[in-house]
Structure formats: C-alpha cells, structure tokens
Length: 309
Picture 1 (cartoon, rainbow, N blue to C red):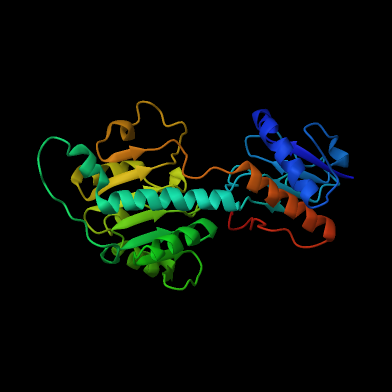
Picture 2: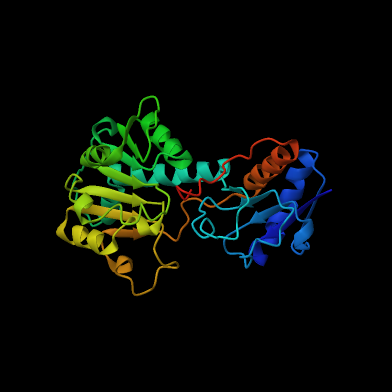
C-alpha cells in the first residue's frame, strides 16, 4: 500500500479525494490517501502552498512532494524541503489559459470594447487590421507560453516569444537574453506576460521596458502580479502610451477595493480566473507521477530550485 498525504486547504478535500481515487484506480495504484497520515509512513505528499504544512523534516520516508498548483514560489525556498518537488503542469489548466489569452487577445485586436461602448446611435466604422499585421509578444515560453504562442500563431498573428534560455518553435520567433527582450518588446502591439514569479522576474515590465513598446500597445497579464511595476503601468496608461491593460493577477489578492486599477478606464480586472487547476486532469498528473516514482522512473515537472520554477 502506498501512503499519500493530502496537504492542501481542507476545502479542497471533497473535490480532490474522489478524483484522485479514480486516477489511482485507473493506473492500478493501491493508494491510501488521507489528510492525517503519521509523517513517518508517508510515501508522497500531495501539496498546495495554502497548506499549513511547513516543516518537511519528519517525512523521512517520503519520495516526493507533488504540487497541485503551477506556482511554487510559496514553497521553493523552504529549507526543510529537500525532497524532489514537482510543479503542476495540467493539460486542463493549459487549455484554460490558451482560451483566456486567445479571447482577450482577440478582444483587443478587434476593438471589441470600442464596439460595446459605442451604442449611442453614432455610426463610426472601425475596421481592425488583419491578425497578420498585429505583432504579439509573449514573455515566458514555458508550457503555458508555448501553448498560447502556437494558438495565436495558428490564428495568423506574427508571434514573438521571449524566454530566459533559448527555445525553438515552428512558426514563432523565439528570442532570449537582454538584447532579445528589447527586440521582443519593440514589436509587441499586444504583450502577454507568462513568466514565473522569481526575484529575477520581478518588475520585468517597468518604466524603461514599457517605453520600448509601440505606442498604443495592449498589455495582458495572466502570469504573476509582481511581473509589473504597477505605478509605471498606471503612468503609461495615463499618458496614453499603453492603450489598455487586462490584468488577472496582482501583488495582493484579492485586489484591494481602493486600488487604482479598479477605477481606471483603461484597465480590465479579472479575479485570477485565467487558468485554474482542473481537478480531474490534475489528479491524473499526480497519479502518473506516483506511478513513475513507484517504478523508479524520473518524476515529471521537477522544479529547478536555483531557477525557482
């Protein structure tokens, strides 16, 4: 029998317990999943950073910590965690992100907000350019960024992807490094942020880099709140340098009611809904990793502690 500890907020148990059991059964795994296993008998920890579990030293038999979230910034620096840590790469979550990003990219590209607010009896035709004439840049070419890049490229947008390390993707201009970042921003009529949250990525979009964007660019951030210097973005919006910002993630969540983003006419706030872990598909990922661990194979999606993701 494999002992798995479910270490997430208690309100997730009712949703995840049956889905995980189904995923284990499908793979023929005999797993005793509980919220209260004694630490010395735990083989795997199914974890979410909103758990109260912070000290991993008693889990002497444990083989891996399997995160239910894509983000690991809340746990990656925990000095008691010396076990392999796997982040969540969930096909359902990826699909959700692609749909959200594609929807808001098309919204800004087609000028849908203008059409919605123009219901005043005034006939003012506004014909957008074709997708082929609108440059889209994605900062962050991991699993989510690559999937979004391919979807937007398939719609005809010329897509540039920037990442910390070199990447390759057919039909997509892939850049890296500081010079590559300048080039990627320079063509970004629509800029999409999908970088992880690390000390190296904080304030990636600051005043200097906002000034590199074409005038009237759109900013879409479903990645992480700290990627943006909020004051710099608000100033660029006020000047009209940035036409609109659609933001799904913030430094403080829920976004405080008095935050300037709420009332700004050129900002759309969505409440961290761009992509949520899907219970069924995430459970299948957890089960697959446990199966791999039991077979002595390498775990999927292991976090690079130095990189922070």
